[in-house]
Length: 174
Image (tube, rainbow, N blue to C red; front, side, top):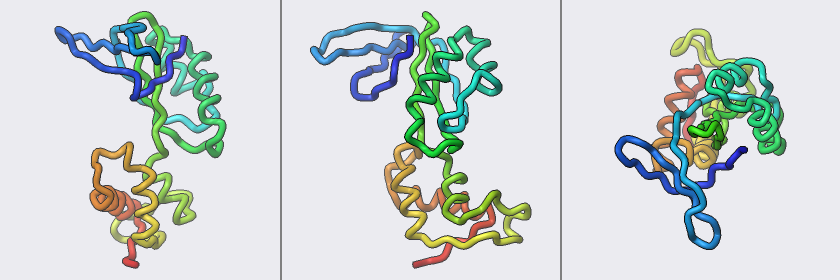
């Protein structure tokens, strides 16, 4: 059974070191509570999850249904460009069910798409492979901010500038 994570209808509680998730239905009463066993983080291509590595071994060694995850992931990512790398956070429970949350593509991928690159610089700080404008980085920050550890667009832009510099991409002012 696959349960889709919805931040609006789930509440986390920690009781004596055990994390439980309580789900509420539309009528407002408790429908289930499960003990979280662990969290798996993967980077998978949109619409192309298969039982081969890294998906199969990561889920299989924990006794989770690999094909069920692959089918659900591929169904949820069919509207995204195929092959786009997506970070996935899989929370699995003691009864071998799981929920997963799909995040936005990594900033490095977005920067490569923006600059039209296949890869970043081999000599970071010495070789400039592309130039981007701050207004373009603002668009990336606005799209990615929900997955970043900040609520400020300016701070998100600063983080993205750091990633761009480490990839050999020069950031130009307006």
